[in-house]
Image (cartoon, rainbow, N blue to C red; front, side):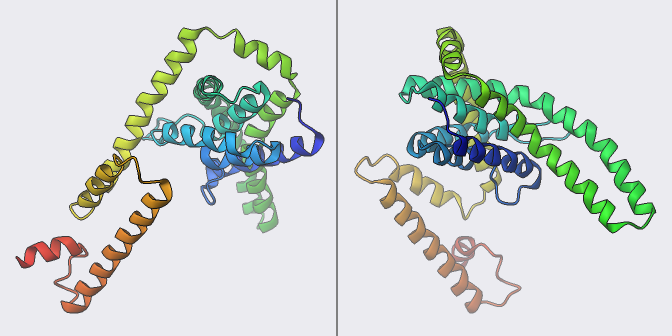
Length: 269
Protein backbone atom coordinates (compact mmCIF):
# COMPACT_ATOMS: atom_id res chain seq x y z
CA UNK A 1 0.00 0.00 0.00
CA UNK A 2 1.07 3.59 -0.62
CA UNK A 3 1.25 6.00 2.32
CA UNK A 4 -0.31 9.45 2.41
CA UNK A 5 1.66 12.53 3.34
CA UNK A 6 0.56 12.50 6.98
CA UNK A 7 1.60 8.86 7.42
CA UNK A 8 4.99 9.56 5.84
CA UNK A 9 5.62 12.50 8.16
CA UNK A 10 4.60 10.51 11.23
CA UNK A 11 6.79 7.55 10.23
CA UNK A 12 9.79 9.82 9.71
CA UNK A 13 9.22 11.37 13.14
CA UNK A 14 9.02 7.90 14.71
CA UNK A 15 12.19 6.87 12.88
CA UNK A 16 14.04 10.01 13.99
CA UNK A 17 13.01 9.58 17.62
CA UNK A 18 13.83 5.86 17.55
CA UNK A 19 17.32 6.65 16.27
CA UNK A 20 17.94 9.08 19.11
CA UNK A 21 16.50 6.68 21.66
CA UNK A 22 19.00 4.06 20.51
CA UNK A 23 21.57 6.23 22.31
CA UNK A 24 19.51 7.91 25.01
CA UNK A 25 17.59 4.84 26.28
CA UNK A 26 15.21 7.23 28.04
CA UNK A 27 11.78 6.18 26.78
CA UNK A 28 12.79 3.01 24.84
CA UNK A 29 11.21 4.17 21.58
CA UNK A 30 13.84 2.16 19.70
CA UNK A 31 12.55 -1.13 21.11
CA UNK A 32 10.70 -3.19 18.47
CA UNK A 33 7.44 -3.49 20.40
CA UNK A 34 7.19 0.32 20.64
CA UNK A 35 8.69 1.38 17.29
CA UNK A 36 6.65 -1.13 15.26
CA UNK A 37 3.48 -0.20 17.14
CA UNK A 38 4.02 3.50 16.43
CA UNK A 39 4.58 2.80 12.73
CA UNK A 40 1.42 0.69 12.73
CA UNK A 41 -0.48 3.52 14.41
CA UNK A 42 0.74 5.97 11.77
CA UNK A 43 -0.25 3.66 8.90
CA UNK A 44 -3.54 2.36 10.26
CA UNK A 45 -2.28 -1.19 10.86
CA UNK A 46 -1.77 -1.07 14.60
CA UNK A 47 -2.79 -4.65 15.38
CA UNK A 48 -0.57 -6.22 12.72
CA UNK A 49 2.46 -4.13 13.66
CA UNK A 50 2.03 -4.86 17.38
CA UNK A 51 2.20 -8.58 16.56
CA UNK A 52 5.32 -7.98 14.45
CA UNK A 53 6.88 -5.85 17.19
CA UNK A 54 6.21 -8.53 19.78
CA UNK A 55 7.93 -11.16 17.63
CA UNK A 56 10.91 -8.89 17.01
CA UNK A 57 11.11 -7.94 20.69
CA UNK A 58 11.79 -11.57 21.60
CA UNK A 59 14.68 -11.57 19.14
CA UNK A 60 16.02 -8.19 20.29
CA UNK A 61 16.23 -9.45 23.88
CA UNK A 62 19.39 -11.26 22.82
CA UNK A 63 20.98 -8.13 21.35
CA UNK A 64 23.30 -6.37 23.76
CA UNK A 65 26.55 -4.41 23.59
CA UNK A 66 29.25 -6.55 25.18
CA UNK A 67 32.65 -4.92 25.49
CA UNK A 68 33.74 -3.59 22.11
CA UNK A 69 31.12 -5.69 20.30
CA UNK A 70 28.18 -3.57 19.12
CA UNK A 71 24.75 -5.19 19.03
CA UNK A 72 22.63 -5.17 15.86
CA UNK A 73 20.61 -2.02 15.30
CA UNK A 74 17.21 -2.66 16.84
CA UNK A 75 15.87 0.77 15.86
CA UNK A 76 16.55 0.34 12.14
CA UNK A 77 15.31 -3.25 12.23
CA UNK A 78 12.05 -2.21 13.89
CA UNK A 79 11.18 0.80 11.74
CA UNK A 80 12.33 -0.65 8.42
CA UNK A 81 10.69 -4.05 8.92
CA UNK A 82 7.39 -2.41 9.91
CA UNK A 83 7.48 -0.27 6.76
CA UNK A 84 8.24 -3.31 4.60
CA UNK A 85 5.56 -5.33 6.39
CA UNK A 86 2.86 -2.73 5.71
CA UNK A 87 4.01 -2.03 2.15
CA UNK A 88 3.97 -5.74 1.30
CA UNK A 89 0.35 -5.95 2.41
CA UNK A 90 0.73 -9.58 3.46
CA UNK A 91 -0.27 -9.78 7.12
CA UNK A 92 -0.29 -13.56 7.29
CA UNK A 93 2.30 -15.67 9.11
CA UNK A 94 4.25 -15.90 5.86
CA UNK A 95 4.38 -12.13 5.52
CA UNK A 96 5.47 -11.77 9.13
CA UNK A 97 8.23 -14.34 8.55
CA UNK A 98 9.54 -12.34 5.60
CA UNK A 99 9.43 -9.11 7.63
CA UNK A 100 11.37 -10.74 10.47
CA UNK A 101 13.95 -12.03 8.00
CA UNK A 102 14.31 -8.50 6.61
CA UNK A 103 14.60 -7.11 10.13
CA UNK A 104 17.47 -9.41 11.08
CA UNK A 105 19.28 -8.51 7.86
CA UNK A 106 18.72 -4.77 8.28
CA UNK A 107 19.82 -4.92 11.91
CA UNK A 108 23.19 -6.20 10.75
CA UNK A 109 23.41 -3.61 7.97
CA UNK A 110 22.60 -0.95 10.56
CA UNK A 111 25.93 -1.64 12.23
CA UNK A 112 27.62 0.07 9.27
CA UNK A 113 25.51 3.19 9.75
CA UNK A 114 26.30 3.10 13.46
CA UNK A 115 30.03 3.07 12.70
CA UNK A 116 29.66 6.00 10.29
CA UNK A 117 27.72 8.11 12.79
CA UNK A 118 30.11 7.33 15.63
CA UNK A 119 33.03 8.31 13.41
CA UNK A 120 31.33 11.63 12.69
CA UNK A 121 30.73 12.04 16.41
CA UNK A 122 34.49 12.20 16.96
CA UNK A 123 34.64 15.35 14.83
CA UNK A 124 31.59 16.79 16.58
CA UNK A 125 33.12 16.18 20.01
CA UNK A 126 36.22 18.13 19.00
CA UNK A 127 33.98 21.02 18.00
CA UNK A 128 32.27 20.82 21.38
CA UNK A 129 35.68 20.85 23.10
CA UNK A 130 36.62 23.96 21.15
CA UNK A 131 33.39 25.66 22.26
CA UNK A 132 34.10 24.63 25.86
CA UNK A 133 37.57 26.20 25.71
CA UNK A 134 35.93 29.46 24.68
CA UNK A 135 33.50 29.16 27.58
CA UNK A 136 30.50 28.91 25.25
CA UNK A 137 27.84 26.84 26.97
CA UNK A 138 25.51 27.38 24.05
CA UNK A 139 28.14 26.05 21.65
CA UNK A 140 28.66 22.90 23.70
CA UNK A 141 24.91 22.34 23.84
CA UNK A 142 24.58 22.95 20.10
CA UNK A 143 27.18 20.34 19.14
CA UNK A 144 25.66 17.82 21.52
CA UNK A 145 22.31 18.34 19.79
CA UNK A 146 24.00 17.95 16.40
CA UNK A 147 25.47 14.61 17.48
CA UNK A 148 22.06 13.50 18.73
CA UNK A 149 20.41 14.60 15.49
CA UNK A 150 22.90 12.48 13.53
CA UNK A 151 21.70 9.47 15.48
CA UNK A 152 18.13 10.28 14.53
CA UNK A 153 19.00 10.77 10.87
CA UNK A 154 20.74 7.38 10.95
CA UNK A 155 17.26 5.81 11.03
CA UNK A 156 15.16 8.53 9.42
CA UNK A 157 17.13 8.59 6.13
CA UNK A 158 16.87 4.82 5.45
CA UNK A 159 13.21 4.97 6.46
CA UNK A 160 12.63 7.80 3.98
CA UNK A 161 14.37 5.80 1.26
CA UNK A 162 12.11 2.81 1.94
CA UNK A 163 9.05 5.04 1.86
CA UNK A 164 10.15 6.41 -1.52
CA UNK A 165 10.37 2.92 -3.03
CA UNK A 166 7.16 1.99 -4.89
CA UNK A 167 4.98 -0.61 -3.23
CA UNK A 168 5.14 -2.92 -6.26
CA UNK A 169 8.93 -2.92 -6.13
CA UNK A 170 8.89 -3.94 -2.47
CA UNK A 171 6.37 -6.69 -3.12
CA UNK A 172 8.33 -8.05 -6.09
CA UNK A 173 11.59 -7.98 -4.13
CA UNK A 174 10.07 -9.84 -1.21
CA UNK A 175 8.46 -12.36 -3.52
CA UNK A 176 11.84 -13.05 -5.11
CA UNK A 177 13.42 -14.10 -1.81
CA UNK A 178 14.08 -17.85 -1.78
CA UNK A 179 12.35 -20.05 0.75
CA UNK A 180 15.64 -21.27 2.20
CA UNK A 181 16.63 -17.69 3.03
CA UNK A 182 13.43 -16.66 4.79
CA UNK A 183 13.16 -19.99 6.62
CA UNK A 184 16.81 -19.85 7.66
CA UNK A 185 16.48 -16.32 9.01
CA UNK A 186 13.34 -17.29 10.91
CA UNK A 187 15.11 -20.29 12.45
CA UNK A 188 18.12 -18.15 13.32
CA UNK A 189 15.82 -15.59 14.91
CA UNK A 190 14.32 -18.36 17.02
CA UNK A 191 17.78 -19.24 18.31
CA UNK A 192 18.36 -15.60 19.23
CA UNK A 193 15.07 -15.61 21.16
CA UNK A 194 16.35 -18.50 23.27
CA UNK A 195 19.58 -16.62 23.92
CA UNK A 196 17.61 -13.52 24.92
CA UNK A 197 15.53 -15.43 27.42
CA UNK A 198 18.66 -17.09 28.82
CA UNK A 199 20.34 -13.69 29.31
CA UNK A 200 17.30 -12.26 31.10
CA UNK A 201 16.94 -15.32 33.32
CA UNK A 202 20.65 -15.23 34.14
CA UNK A 203 20.36 -11.62 35.30
CA UNK A 204 17.33 -12.44 37.46
CA UNK A 205 18.64 -15.74 38.82
CA UNK A 206 18.32 -15.25 42.57
CA UNK A 207 16.89 -17.69 45.10
CA UNK A 208 13.89 -15.49 45.88
CA UNK A 209 12.89 -15.20 42.20
CA UNK A 210 13.25 -18.83 41.06
CA UNK A 211 10.00 -20.01 42.76
CA UNK A 212 8.00 -17.36 40.91
CA UNK A 213 9.65 -18.32 37.64
CA UNK A 214 8.64 -21.95 37.99
CA UNK A 215 5.12 -20.97 39.07
CA UNK A 216 4.73 -18.88 35.92
CA UNK A 217 6.28 -21.63 33.80
CA UNK A 218 3.73 -24.11 35.14
CA UNK A 219 0.76 -21.76 34.76
CA UNK A 220 1.73 -20.94 31.16
CA UNK A 221 0.91 -24.54 30.24
CA UNK A 222 -2.71 -24.07 31.32
CA UNK A 223 -4.46 -23.26 28.05
CA UNK A 224 -7.62 -21.95 29.73
CA UNK A 225 -5.78 -18.96 31.24
CA UNK A 226 -5.87 -15.83 29.10
CA UNK A 227 -3.16 -13.16 29.02
CA UNK A 228 -5.32 -11.01 31.30
CA UNK A 229 -5.56 -13.87 33.80
CA UNK A 230 -1.80 -14.43 33.65
CA UNK A 231 -1.19 -10.72 34.17
CA UNK A 232 -3.57 -10.67 37.14
CA UNK A 233 -1.77 -13.64 38.70
CA UNK A 234 1.59 -12.00 38.14
CA UNK A 235 0.43 -8.76 39.74
CA UNK A 236 -1.03 -10.64 42.70
CA UNK A 237 2.18 -12.60 43.24
CA UNK A 238 4.18 -9.36 43.07
CA UNK A 239 1.94 -7.78 45.73
CA UNK A 240 2.34 -10.86 47.95
CA UNK A 241 6.10 -10.68 47.56
CA UNK A 242 6.19 -6.96 48.41
CA UNK A 243 4.06 -7.57 51.50
CA UNK A 244 6.38 -10.37 52.61
CA UNK A 245 9.35 -8.07 52.16
CA UNK A 246 7.67 -5.27 54.14
CA UNK A 247 6.55 -7.52 56.99
CA UNK A 248 9.93 -9.16 57.41
CA UNK A 249 11.58 -5.76 57.46
CA UNK A 250 9.31 -4.64 60.31
CA UNK A 251 9.70 -7.85 62.35
CA UNK A 252 13.50 -7.90 62.32
CA UNK A 253 16.16 -5.29 62.63
CA UNK A 254 17.64 -3.81 59.48
CA UNK A 255 20.90 -5.63 60.04
CA UNK A 256 19.25 -9.05 60.09
CA UNK A 257 17.08 -8.41 57.04
CA UNK A 258 18.92 -9.63 53.96
CA UNK A 259 16.44 -8.14 51.50
CA UNK A 260 15.40 -11.65 50.48
CA UNK A 261 12.02 -12.27 52.18
CA UNK A 262 11.73 -15.89 51.11
CA UNK A 263 15.32 -16.55 52.14
CA UNK A 264 14.75 -14.93 55.52
CA UNK A 265 11.63 -17.05 56.09
CA UNK A 266 13.51 -20.23 55.20
CA UNK A 267 16.36 -19.22 57.51
CA UNK A 268 13.88 -19.07 60.40
CA UNK A 269 13.25 -22.77 60.01
